[in-house]
Length: 119
Image (tube, rainbow, N blue to C red; front, side, top):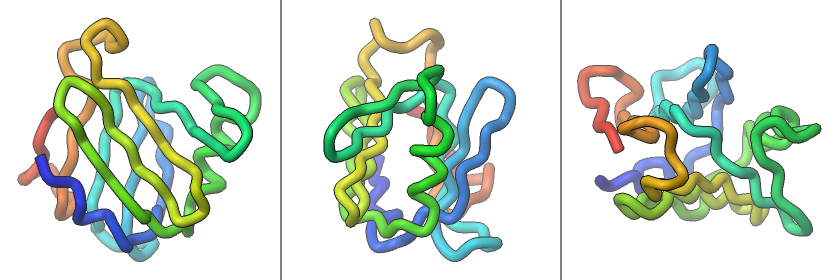
């Protein structure tokens, strides 16, 4: 699956929905590329990483709003990484032993559910 559509775009919103997360890219208020994640990613900062449930996790994710994506990669059964120009990385392991369900999430290049692809 090609997720490079988010490269060069800014993170427009971080949405905490029940027990999953949505990351929307592009201009705020528009239907840009959308990740729906059913597993919680790590936030890798310059000096340390933060995982779900740790203090400041939500703040670390939300601090990326407005940041431009430098690189994005999805390696099936391995990892999802979104690196911002600031050097911060949002990373999610896609290894079976690290997931609690059959899928880790989905990606929609248009932001619509009509072209969502599961991973």
